[in-house]
Length: 218
Image 1 (cartoon, rainbow, N blue to C red):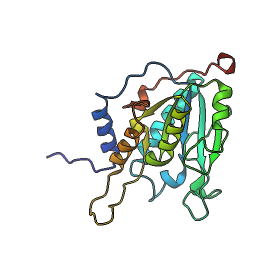
Image 2: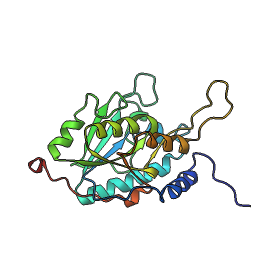
Image 3: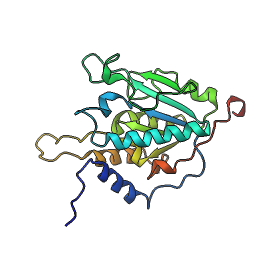
């Protein structure tokens, strides 16, 4: 008998993406910007890494490489954790964890809230670049990924969310319960909560990119 993948594992995430592929929306066109949310060492390295951090990181790096080749805008969003948190500002856990450092034309935007637009220059940067479509990847699915994607939708951006390029932790049992929620399931619920406007695609590899037109095209 074949072993079943463990909940929250890379295998479970891949299987979930395959199941989603039949219902995911097709992409009508290329995307002009990539938002890489909280890909930091606190969540991607060591014993405290998210269950399928390596898989999410690999897909984020692939998205970065292809967005870079196409001339799309790339924004690395970095959370400034509070004192005592695993991503506390200035600590090793706070550092960006992508194996490729942000390039000279890429931007790092620091935030203190889940929403990458909240009291940051992200909205201004996207407007100045003429961006109208973007893809979101990173962690955590139900927190910063969800909040940033929702905020982008509220600002009338076209938002693409690759199912296999965001992740989170297993959710512990509720009071009085004995079973928690596997990370892969929590991620799926988070993207479902975004409603019909978000474009959920099964695989990050299927997301095409192009350079933004610039402000003169607005």
